[in-house]
Length: 412
Image 1 (cartoon, rainbow, N blue to C red):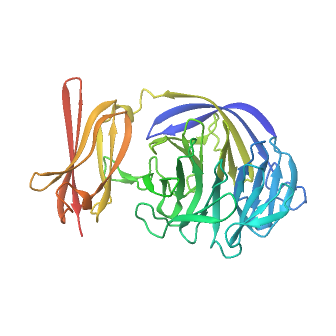
Image 2 (spheres, rainbow, N blue to C red; image 1 turned 30 degrees about the vertical axis):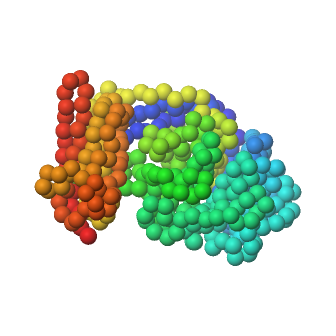
Image 3 (cartoon, one colour; image 1 turned 45 degrees about the horizontal axis):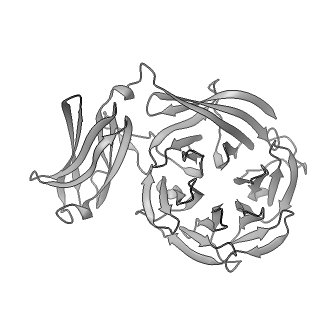
């Protein structure tokens, strides 16, 4: 096991740099993918991990039909044989929850079966991930059913939300799931729609983040603070949200409202940290991330975050309305803009006759990127008809006002 202090680089926006200081160590099970494990078989494509309150780490290896058990320092201390385990969770009393095949089972600390959630076999189409609340309530993402299913601490089903689709509250293959610190909100990785959606404890939709890319000044669609294939999700004690992205091989950071903060991609020597980061977990102030291809688990302790902007940073000098995506659009579209400083802004929608039909935001916003959705079915004049519309961004400060406008096309 390597143990060292390191500075992890977090890249923000196009050129912005966040310095985030971690006490960081990497432990592998084994140290590299060719080394023998405790059974001499070699590690094989870890899928999910969960960390108990005492620091014990459980890792599912469906290709090896087992769950690996490691100490808080990365030492292998045992395994549980089970057919193709994927989703993992730990109940408040220390019992382990394992999602495999079409069921989720409850096991004691020794791996002995106790019971199953719901009806047992056939309760799920594909349990992918789960989060357990402090009162024992259990939320499980069922990828193939495109739902999140909710269970009481006795294992009985008490509800579900979601359904196949790309609308608000719908999923295409939900993956990772977690809760905020106060356990009032549930965050779900909507992998097929490349976004994260936020819900209350009952499953009512609240908001989303990262669904679309945006269009730059050269009219090119680019990825910046969005996801390509999000997988795992975790929340730290400051309610910052971390998402592992398989295709970008990084961890992206959002604030509690889903605004993009940056991404953890390399160490202070500019070495890539992750290759296919399958899952992440947060216990106390320690963040764990697992790499499927290298079979390593990285553990970071967040000590401090310092925002530093490069003098050559173009983002800090921009006031820009990126426009909307998709365009043309049907029903709803997302509008992204960049502020160079904290400003009072107003984002409005106008029709071709010069009538204002919607106000998306009005108030003081911080510097950086922002994104809002216009649902044309809910304009101030009723459902908007097909045609040309304009989004107008007005920013005021120091006694001056700046205005930018972009054209949009609604097609029904």
